[in-house]
Amino acid sequence: MHLHRAILVDDESFTRKGLMKLIDWEACGFQIVGEADNGEDALELIKRIQPELVITDIRMPVIDGLELIRLVSIETMLKPSFIIISGYNDFKYAQQAMRYGVHDFVVKPIDDIEFSAILQTLNGKLKQEKEEQLKKERLQGSELIKALILEEADAASTDEWEVRLNLGKKDRLTYVFAELNDNHSWKQAGQMVSSARFHEILREELIRLTGIVQPICMHEHRNRIGFLLTSQLLDSFQGDLERFLTKLRTMLDVQYGKTVFLYAGTFVPRLSDLRDSYKSAKEALLYKYINEDKRIVVYDQIRSEQLQYIGFEPSLLHLFMEQFEEQKQDSVQATVEQWFRDFREKRYAPEAIKMNLQQCVLGILKTIRSMEGDELTLSTLQPVLNWHDLNLSLGELRRLFAAFIEESQHYVAELRGEQQKGGIQKIKSYIELHYSENISLKSIAAKFYINPVYLGQLFKKTYSVYFNEFLLQLRVNEAKKLLRQSCSMRIYEIAEKVGFSNADYFVTQFEKIEQMTPTEYRNQLK
Image (cartoon, rainbow, N blue to C red):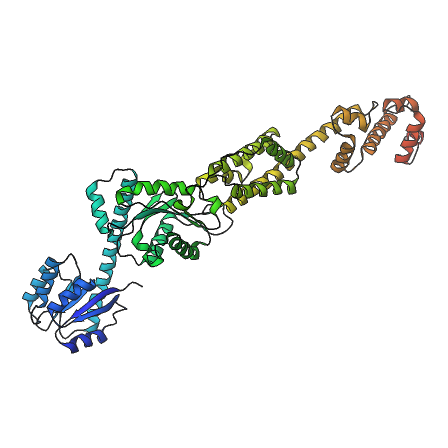
């Protein structure tokens, strides 16, 4: 809880002590940080402590309360709030005090309930003013960074900000990107964090880490937050930038887990040179995936390291697609794992990773389309098509890509099943149309370009009956129909009509199924 600083000014010690005990200052949003028994000492105390509230008596030796207020206004840039206490119920004092902008005028003896109410009202006002000032400074700081990056800042405003940031001639500064990763609508669990919330948490942790009193200049770059870091803020870290960033990252991990990455540009001597630091911080972003364990990239440490912009070997990609289409899930998974190890160990640039994964995705989509599938039905398609517009860790990218591969494999299996089902139906229709001809499993398999063993297995799986049994039943059923409808056709003629070249074999097979001969079947109809 933030407490506003207050000092008490009264030439009577018992009045100050009594007032300190009378009021629950913390509950009202204040803490007493100093006392003075005269206006002269109070003026020096105000300059040194810079309180938000001064509670002063009117009548004091040397410098009275009203004169103290006047001197603060003309000798300092400070604008504390004043509450005047007086034992004189004189309206003229109140009028004069209000002309100086005094918050309130309290007459002794002090009523604790009334005074507490005044403090609570002032507390609300100061909080609102502080928030408005912070918003103003944030906007100004953001606009400054934008202007410096675009080289549109004028010298006067740059000089003014160097004063506000307390930059000395020996101070240096760097630009740092803070990046929240894996914060997207496709993540496995948890809610998305708004950019505004991340911005605010980052600001709070920077204040907590540095104890900074000057403004913090921050700017939102679409999906990252940039902030200006001066060398004086590294004093407690012996000037070690990486130690500072490690501590900041650890603090942010409490809020977001291990999803925050930090990228620092090179140090520059003046605020007007910030664009150079910004550009090098952007360069540091390219080294993200090969520094994923640390989640910190300092440009000056990696500036000489080379990145790889290479594509997959065509033969390896072709082998992967074969494994994918053959439903060799273990092989596909092993290949994907190897790719992602290579991305780190062989120092792939993000653009190279994007290019290679897109090439793989397009190959899979081509397979789906060739099988008359609709890739838009895949729930994992959008993440793998649009991941490069987000901040993703390599681990999360691997998870999304693996999920796409798995779903695509299941979909291809379904499409193949539908195709097989459609194909076997055509074969069944062909058998029903040509049962009377000299057909066999082998001849039909050759006609439809299918392995005969596979065709036999597929037919049994689809219709729960073997091909030969189905064909025999079909021929016997047709023979029974002819026996019912024609009394003049001889048995051998019927056998030949339904596809049997041997009448005796026909009789044997008929009797096997119907438990009677064709003649017995015909005779029972009389």
